[in-house]
Amino acid sequence: MVRLTRVQQQARTRAAVLAAAREEFAEHGFVPAKVDRIADRAELTRGAVYSNFPSKRALYLAVLIDQIEKVAAGEPRAIVSPSSRVDALGVFARVWLERLPLVGDSAPGGRLQLRSLEGVLEDEHGPAVLAQVARLEALLLAIALERGAPARQVRLAELVLTLLDGAGHRAETLPGFGDPFDVAHACRHLGGIDLKDTWAPPHLPYVAPARTCADAWTIPEGLVDQISGDPVDLANGLVVVLGAGRLGAAEEAVRSAKPGEQVTVVVVTGDAEETGRLVRLRVSDAVGCLRRVFAPEAWQHVRLVLDGDALVASAIGLTDPGDDTESAVSVRNGVIVARADGRGAGYAAGARRREATS
Image 1 (cartoon, rainbow, N blue to C red):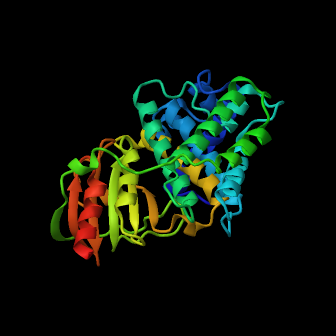
Image 2 (image 1 turned 135 degrees about the vertical axis):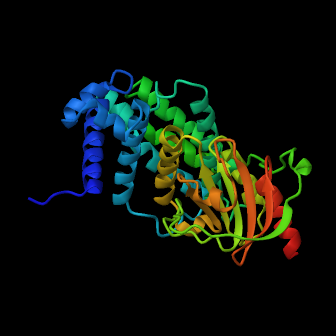
Image 3 (image 1 turned 45 degrees about the vertical axis):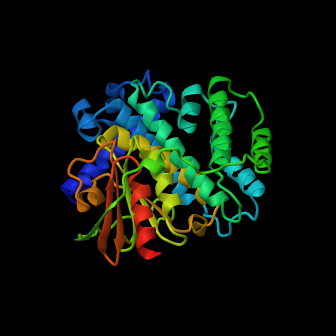
């Protein structure tokens, strides 16, 4: 009999806990689920469960992430992006709505299929983070829609996601009500609406300028772009590090960059077990849908990194990154040439880079 290494044993225990938890949540839902029953299902002790996941909430989020990532691994990726906003939104809506449970599904199982967070976020912090993640999701959809579009499409993306989230909530509270094909049809037609979207945040003129510098740094290796799945090279471009509570500022960095310049949005958090998993859940879910509709080049120069170990934050000199972090650097040929911190950091570093290269 082959003896497992410590790492192999830990992986086996973790897999057993996830499988048992998935069964428990599918049968009972999040709130009524019991960690003791999960331990019994996995034939482990309660302590073994908590040694892998510090809370029931962290375990539930891990189950949802595992579910999404396994599905995404078997899904085909888009080769060619739809030729129009209307078609793109119709396809995106249909992909998103595949999560809706069938009429005969149990209520707890349906909520698991929906990635429901009902009863999961008991404090004010979770919903606040979700609001920021929603802004990031809308930005990612908007960037893909803006290829060939004459104007910003963030308001349109927010409107479509609001409609889809509403359909999910209705399916959770009133199973079988409404026709998802009607929802997809409505999303498609939203693509023909001109919302007169503009980009003019009132605080940007008051943002402190970035500081010029010439700082050598050790670029972290092994970073992966969540959008394309490809390795990320930080030797050139704009790098903005945002805490989970500041993700809405990602657009400031994207809009400040010169055409064709790489912008890497790096997400950090002060709570990797719960807040970090919440962000990963929503990002994995959104990106999984987007990848099936748009080819990778739809995001052009934008990269997204979930930096759970704060490798990038540490490399640029941040000592205690958390959910309120907002910092940016401009990098040229492996050297940091500008730095900015605080509100508007991405915009400030991008503006400094434009000045230096104009």
